[in-house]
Image: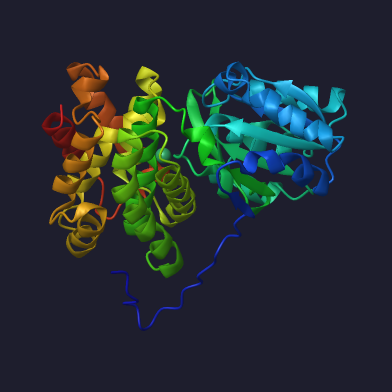
Length: 388
Ligand SMILES: [Fe+2]
């Protein structure tokens, strides 16, 4: 387990604030009163197209109306929202004279909402707010209230300080990070995730697990027992509940556990991510794959890559996950239960691209810097071949 091994060093352990989390089946019906209490009178409502099709967006609009909160609906959100889309949403927000933002969907909708809150209150190009380029300090104006309603249990964006955007000009994804973009409220209704297709349930669940595992062992903050505790409990929840929701999508108790695991993962990866996410990001971007699917075999690489560096931690994780003795074995057991892909060939990755993927993943500083073992391109390539 995590233990303080630096008698001569002083650490600053900061805990980022969580938004209030309203959790439970049917809690979506509280949206009207909550939005009004946050001072919203006209909200820009960003939602995934499927939520619109299923009538969930109309349900929210109706509830908001009861409390005299008008809505401007935007239901065409792109995956990994590009800067241009945030700019367009910014224009819409001002044109429609909105005073709050509501997002219902997966990571893309929620990240768009968080980035939009910066867009409508700050001058300058969105790329100026990239955290790696010192953008966090530039987010200093008060932001409008944001409510997030996750419809998957994966990214944890509803509770954390991050938003991921695409910069098409530079051909990259970049991160905005600030305590200020933590939503003002997260409404977590497991009924929303109970209609998720099985494959999406499995993929987003593995993403949540990857955040917890990589966060638990992340070395960006080598000592942070608070995040470690969240990550560890998140692993326990995924181990017990992901197979249950896969077998029975309507199991609301297990859906609630998965929602909490996503929150724990989304917060605890502040401690660091690793090669599971560096490989996942490169593969996801190159072949336009959903993030969770790209991360699934990549997490197996993470387990093997760091086997020696994290011997004790992995033993603890494997036991907590599903009473396995070894993390790789534990993951394979879980993947088998939820029919998750274990090989990069299963994702349609061409074998001849593996060297390029290893090169790009080894240069992904954001994720490699927190990996427990030092990252070498050669080793990544070996692993990509092992899991091809
Ligand atoms: Fe992720």
